[in-house]
Amino acid sequence: MLDHYIDRQTPMANTLSNPIITTRGLRKSYDRKTEILKGIDITIRQGERVALIGSNGCGKSTLLRCLIGLHEVTAGEVTALGETFTGLPAGAQKARLRRQTGFVFQKHCLVRRRSVLSNVIHGMMSEPGRWRAFSQMTAPEPWRHAALEALSWVNLTDKAAARADALSGGQQQRVSIARALVRRPALLIADEPAASLDPVSGNDVMALFARLCADHGITLLFTSHDMAHARSFADRIVALRAGRVLFDKPAATTTDADLDEVFRVEPR
Ligand SMILES: Nc1ncnc2c1ncn2[C@@H]1O[C@H](COP(=O)(O)OP(=O)(O)O)[C@@H](O)[C@H]1O
Ligand SMILES: [Mg+2]
Image 1: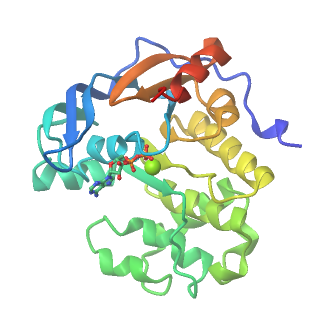
Image 2 (image 1 turned 45 degrees about the horizontal axis):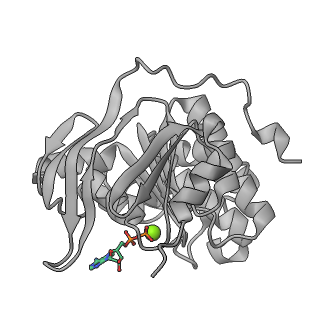
């Protein structure tokens, strides 16, 4: 049932295509005691689908946030979507980064009482004239059009007028995918997007991500604690352990032994 979503014909991203994200010696501490990320060097290229894995609390969400300037980098340098920064990106850089990035989180964060269409239009909030994105009533026609098109990508056109909280968990997560895609971002960042869904809806949502990103040439970086998702829906897996990159390799050649090492518990 899920297989028709999975585009198995999609070639691996061309390793010669442009880098979308590069980090050099990225370090991050929230306080003086603990360093969460201890020098991360990664490159993610245009059109790649990359899974970031690692044990709970190892710094996956922290890394995602550092890459797009939501958290300050303690040391090292990030280049994302053509913007190079240390610390935090400057105001104009941050705005450009936001405009080119779509986000999907574990909790979908929809406005429950608003229509599905209004929620997707909210994805236009980082555009100039943002107040117009508060409701489908004030949104300009091209934004409504873009929102309806994004809803068609996630097969929810018939739910456009429904209240967001009338949808199932899986459908609500699909609405948040449409909201993330409405501005046609170059990069989609998804932090545990399937974690709060039942297994079937979770698989559906991941398959939809993988297919939409392939169809629209969007680079996808997602975190997951589900190794089946990482293996099936990413081209490449980046594993973090103890603040460093343990491995960075094609999903197809990642072995069970590799994964055992990621989650190995140190003897006390
Ligand atoms: N805003 C924050 N302030 C202080 N510590 C934080 C903050 N966010 C995360 N941490 C800590 O950083 C570590 C890594 O967290 P996180 O990036 O959320 O890990 P993961 O996403 O891999 O589970 C954890 O120990 C967490 O408690
Ligand atoms: Mg996390």
